Length: 248
Image 1: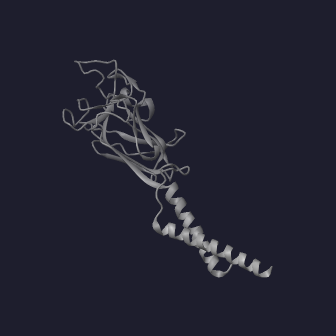
Image 2: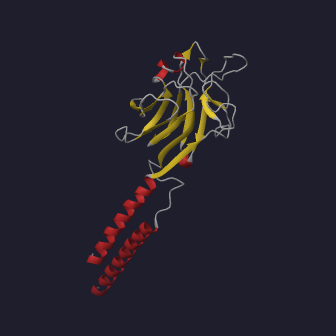
Image 3: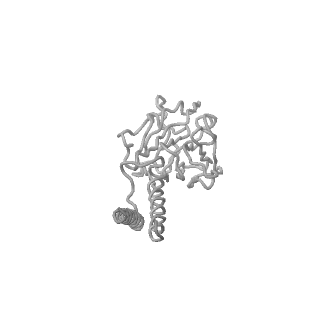
């Protein structure tokens, strides 16, 4: 292969590397304000699932805690009612724990007394949410890996935005977060606090394991490099064929 062919071959390899990166690590994001009132399956209470691009989804549930005040939670619900909700009785809906089977003054299930857990269909790079509790009781956001190991937890704060990203987890992807006073069943309904959240935001990479139906379109420069390489390969093949014919 002559020098020009070698140069174009190298450019082709570079183009393929860039193409691979565009396919395997296309950044995506999801933002949930819950104002539709239902999840992607049309449900407003229980275990709620919201679908994003490239097959990504996030599933919300309670933390499994069972306390005297508020009772056993049975998932979450989208609401504008009170009990730890600074946006109560407005059109701005929030997500809170759903304490089904417990009633007080007609407020069935609306006590928000368990922590809230979000599970992701794949590891994510960033998660943030806003604490919409209407008092100054502090909460913590916990992040876990695929095996349930704690990666990071924020400082205990109140009525603010909580954020965790991979710069805080040592580069480890986040597979679950829990908004609570303590991780697991130790917090939530056991401490008498209320848990509601809004403006849930997550960042993730599309197709982290391979090519998919919705593969991102490569940049023109990448396609140009690949075309140049293909042209070089074709030119080299023709040149070799002519040389063999002339020697015959």
